[in-house]
Length: 407
Image (cartoon, rainbow, N blue to C red; front, side, top):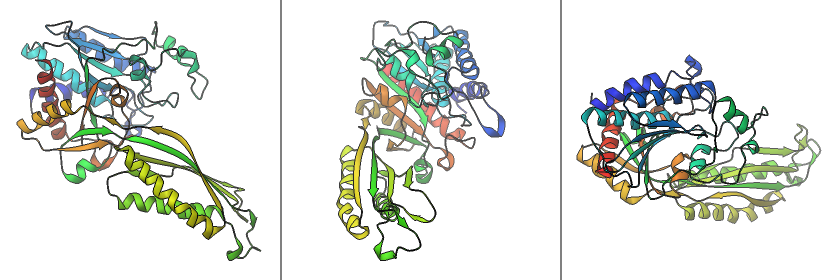
């Protein structure tokens, strides 16, 4: 095993203990005692390497590897430290520990970069506390300017101001800190099954997919379930079912171009002996290309008149949210590709179907992501796992890329 892998394994094993609860997995919610203990462990590890380190007012961890030119725009590297409830050990923690292990290797070898490197361990990427993801990266990117911490409230009534105070954090949590002339790298597990299915150890992310969300309302007529003949019904749920089946099948027919999900549905009057008079369902498209999502919606709308006529219903579509894709920086992608090729490591260019801190940072500065396979495509689960040999390959590419970008 390489020196960087040995350093990473020791660091990661220690980090993974914070919030680990055996078979129920890892629960390391932002600003909890488990989260703050993990951040403080990483802080002390950095200080043992004589690297300046601090935890900011939002709970984000900052570790500085000084460069010979302190005025140069930094290379930011890292990921998040928080987890979902009963999650896995690799999500987020892999990216932070791999960056810090690379710094430890540099210290061991006496490598001096020209640009400074800022390693970041983000808070609240998962959005578990308030239902809003990537708050730590949003804060340092200036996306929360003008907000007040007490505006963010958990389901059990705690606000962000209270959580920060209990964690011993003081100052302005929403202070912007990024030098937008810099660049950002994030190593992360894929969280899907593409790399494992294709038997490829590394993924170089082309874009973080956009997300378009809609609410579809099917209006029919409620009536008696026993006395209304089948050919006299205006069944909103039956019409909705045909729409959902068509949405699913078209996405399936288009391979890996996009995904379509109906994750929520409500039926009225929701009674066993009443024909549904109304059905409302959510619709989400994800793709790395806006045009593909627009075409998917257009195809759905083309089918609506046929379904309306068949079932005697009316169908309307309300736009909820349209988040554009975030393309990764082509120059940074090229460096990742060159490092993989120089080390004879196979890779695949692919989109990220999940959101990450990189989608926040990537709107303001050059950003790139490197993926490793998730066994079984499983994440946000105690079964989350990535093989050591794949992580070692990723560490080699990460180290080489960081050196190439800071020499």
